[in-house]
Image (cartoon, rainbow, N blue to C red; front, side):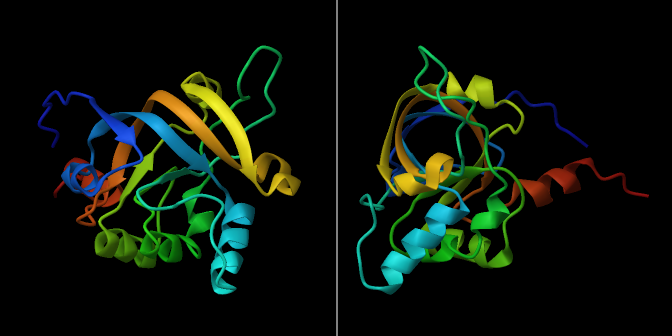
Length: 191
């Protein structure tokens, strides 16, 4: 049963520091402002291959947040096109390695594997959910967008985004608490 408590939305800044990441809790609503990077499965594969070769990443990953998105081309007068989240499970093979290198947050939609949840816990990171189907609304929170790596991937190139009051919810916190589990339990009918 829901306790109907009102939860305020918290404003946070990206990149994330350890204290902020550790203080966020499963189910908490946030507005994220600052710099985040984009990446979907093709970009994640290239980053994993670079690390395997002993090369660096296209940006300093420590404390950073990656938004799993392949935005649509920018229409005239806009910074970016529709920018809704990609299903996060597509990045599960790559996320633990990036978390171990210092990635502090991920934004996407959908469930994560037990291996990713364990890596989130081990590295004090956070997984945020963004609203699927609201790409145009989310794009309005993006103030600047610049391709910084893998331009050959087109929409899946890595971009540096400057965002303002980007709405998200903490799906998995640094303790491994998972809204997909706690939310179901809260609304189960016991019989």
